[in-house]
Each structure stands twice: as structure tokens, then as C-alpha cells.
Image (cartoon, rainbow, N blue to C red; front, top):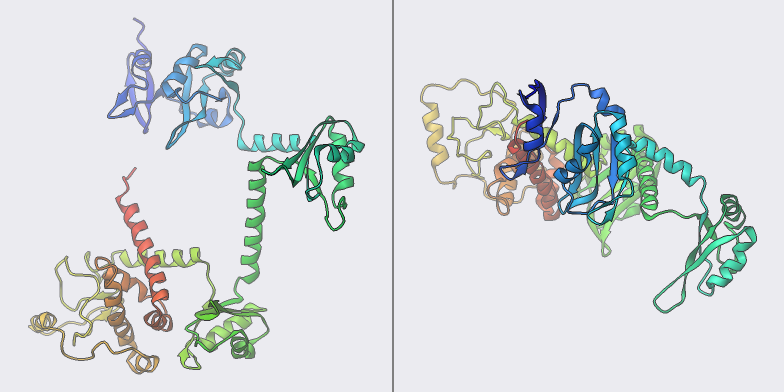
Length: 497
């Protein structure tokens, strides 16, 4: 027996050297191991060969019963195969796949022999693999030579014969079709297929924008497949979206905690001293204010000045929250970034406290929640960025006893107003807000209340006050925080490669 010392590559990047590599390739390829087929192929260390597309073929219109092994067995007769794959989704085979041969000659033999052949009673197409860029260029060239024309907006009185009478003036037509509804009436659009591209092009140029029916402007253009139309619309809307984002970048302000009596004109009047306003809108639901809106200035400098002057200012009966407007994706990214920063180990935060907003004054067991759930405790903890000063001997025992006592000492759950918050020392303001937020969040996310409270306390105080007054706003922010936590947990639990 001829002994071959070559290296075979198994999927999942596992490399094994065999003295009888060809035997292993013939007998073990696609054998099921723990419910999954093993994929074995000759190791190819030159990435340029894979990227070049040399020897790579594309097969489509395959029967659903053809799997990787059946495809490999069918095409291995034409030469050494570097890789072989049937493309699948959750429902199974998508009816196409790829075979990459070691040489272009083997690929050519496979195409010459198999293209148009029956595989499991299905005639398959076998051809050279083309990159996405090549397919796009080829499609563009074909599109320039169109013969099928799409016509719409000619009303419901046109039939196939009447449409042909109009468009046959530009050249010989192969087919004319007016699309009908279930009652047999014209749906106002149809198709004309010409024999020559030049005739189709002339029909588009001369008939587009004309009026066959008074008051109806005709649209005539190259007929497109549905996927092409969807792709074109997607690109168009994405372009509009990017233009809108660019146009409002740095000039559009988000204003929240609006008084119920504030309308568009009053909102514009409040912000008018800071520059030229292009739009001012209070968002409503059924004619009632939703408590927030947007003010757009003509320049970033004006918008920045308005944020500086108006954020926290009391208008009517409420302090405003004013900031540059952000898209939902941006807000989520910022929230994720803050959460990730908080969970990074620091010099003064130990392993079980690092995800919380506050540091406990004394060591706590790992099962303790991240945020102190006692809303009226007489002990004040420090923000997470402040290191704890040295404590006298025995003080920890006193503080521990205080934390274990029933919460009946001071401040009850009276509503927190802007004036109360402003009167409190700066270091205590977040604590006051946290004491109100925690029980509300605990009501619908008891296991995550500590973490979520800590995350939300990163937000500006005026917006936190609005959350206490608006359950809708609180729920929205909590949902964003939960999504961040779930995404982080999924990332942490995913297997490391």
C-alpha cells in the first residue's frame, strides 16, 4: 500500500495527520459524530487559492434530499475536492451549493459533464462560481439591454389589445399583458415585451410622463424583478435616512418633561432666544401631549447654547430635560458602553460589587443585591468612583448593625420634587433618586432591580425625575437596560473559540 503523509483538515479547524489520508477521506468523510457530520478535506494553506475562485463551481436547482455527502460523492469523480457544501437554513437545503476543486481542469470537466444533467429527477445548473461583484456587473450589463417594459397608471379601461395598439408603434412586440383583478378589471398596470432592446428603449423615452388618460401621468420604465425592486427601494430609503441623520446632526434637540399645557408655538417661543428655529414639535397622542418633543435649530452652535441654557430650567411647572436628540441605536450603544465600563474590575471595586452603582461601606456577601434596596436607611453610601476613607476600629460592626435594622428611621416615600433634589448635597442626589427608582423597578424586574437601578442612575438627574413621574418613560428605559444586560449575558455565556 502506498503510504501518503499528507494533512487532512476536519471542520472546526482541527488538523490531523494520517499515514493513509486518502483512505480516511474516502471512508470517514461526512460520518456522523455526536449527531453532526464530520467534514474532511485536504488542507490548503494557501488562502490565495480560495480567494481566487480557481476551480470553484456553483450548482443550483438541486433536490432537497441532496446533502453534503451526496454532493461530494457525485462530483469527486472529476478530481480532488478542496471543499464541498450545500447551503442550508433552518428548514434544510436551499437548493444550491458549491464545490471547490484543486484544479481548474477538474472544474471544467464537472461543468461540461454535469450541467443540465438530472440529479434525483431535477435538472441542475452547474457553472463557474462568480463573486458578488462579478454578478452585479453582469446583471448591470443585462439590465442595460432590457426588452421588457413596465407601464402603470393608465386606468382601468385598458385591455391587452388597447395597450398593444399604443406600444406596437415602437417596434415588434412578443407579448402584451394588462394585469387584472379578481373581477376582471384592469389594475392600471401591465407589461410589454419587445423583440429588440432598441424598441423597448424608445418606448420608455417617448411614453414615460405622457397622458393616455386625461389627468393620469403614465410611468414607463424597464421591468424589474421583485428582489431588484426591493433592493433598489432599500438603498433609496437608506440614503434618505442617512441624509436626514446628517441634516439634523448636532442641531436637533430632544426636550422632555414638558408641561401638559405646552404646545408647538409655546415650545418654539421658549427656545426662540437662542437662535433660528427650523421646527418645534410637541409629540401628542390623541390630542394630548406625551410630555416630550423636539426643537431643531439652524446651526450646531445655536443648539449647544440652547442645551446649556434650557436644561433644568423650569417652564410652567416642570424642569426641562434638554439634550441633543439621539437615535435609539445610539442610546443603546451608549448604555451598553456605560454598563461594560461599570463591570470592568477597578482598584476600589471588588468582584461582586463591580456591576453596581454604589460601593457598600462594609463588605457584603456575594448574594447581596447590587443596589441597596432599603429606601430609607440612615446610612449613606458613596458613589462608585469615590474611594472609602479609613474607618476607626469597630465602626464596621456598628454600620453592619444599622443596615440590619428595620427601615423605619427617616424619609418615607414622599414624591421627590426638583426643588427637593436641588436642595440636597450633590453627593446625595443620586441616592435620593435611587431610593425612588429601586422599588418601582423591583416591581417588574426583582432579580435585576439592583443592576438596572445602577445603570439608570448614570442618566441626567432631570431625566430621572421625569421617569419617576412618567411610567411610560421609565418602562422604556428599563427595557433598554434589560436588553443590554441580556446581550452581555449572551456574549459571556457563548462558547469561547
